[in-house]
Image 1 (cartoon, one colour):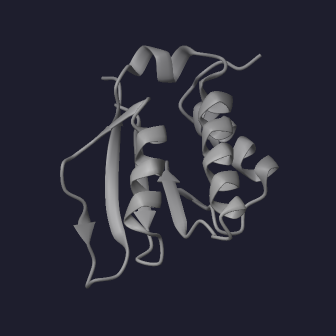
Image 2 (cartoon, one colour):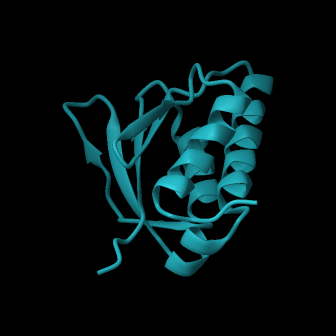
Length: 122
């Protein structure tokens, strides 16, 4: 049985609603999120996204890099507005804190997630 790739997203209340929606637009290119996230005691909002196209996520050699570059671009937009990205991504038991990760760490995290799922990378 093939496991459906999932991506967990934790959004801090410090992130504005508009910035959170912008991030979700980026992520929704590859993942489908439920209509309502779980808000933990008025703190971080937890969302879980399921891959829209499992074959593309698992088999595309550049899927991880494409998503990483989109996340990096989103973070740069925030930084240009003088904001940080208080968001954590989770997949396969690993967590990436976007507030302090370097661009290289974002790329490596997505790349490692694809390797962990058995995707080939060139």
